[in-house]
Length: 158
Image 1 (cartoon, helix red, strand yellow):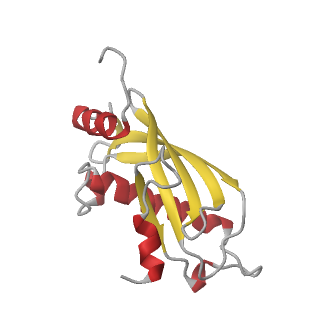
Image 2 (cartoon, rainbow, N blue to C red; image 1 turned 120 degrees about the vertical axis):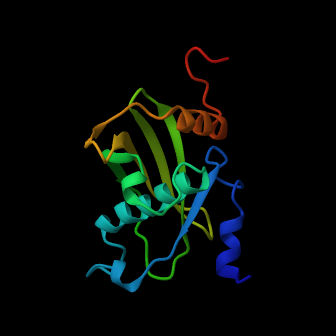
């Protein structure tokens, strides 16, 4: 294993409140004229990490996007430090709150070498039926898996 990849396997050393991390490779095309990652690329990094999170929890098989079952309703990003080409980046992802039809996800983009914070973010994901074209309740299977993984105690459950 290369030194570059080994930093991604220190999963719970720094961001202990996050159980899931996804490594992101900074590509040359991600840079802007100021030679750091363009602000819009952060959304792509969040998306990559979010999709891998739902795959790892077994909520989506990664095959058909029509079966994904969620859609982005809102995103908020706070930029803390620039990301430069060659830096090892990892994204911590967690579900902080489960609603009836939505969930609040939180993210941290950090330097995998020294744990410096590049950005923090939140997104609201709405459970969505792409076949019908409308929102739906968060599936019960999703609720159970996410609550168990994140340690979320829902109302009515001990």
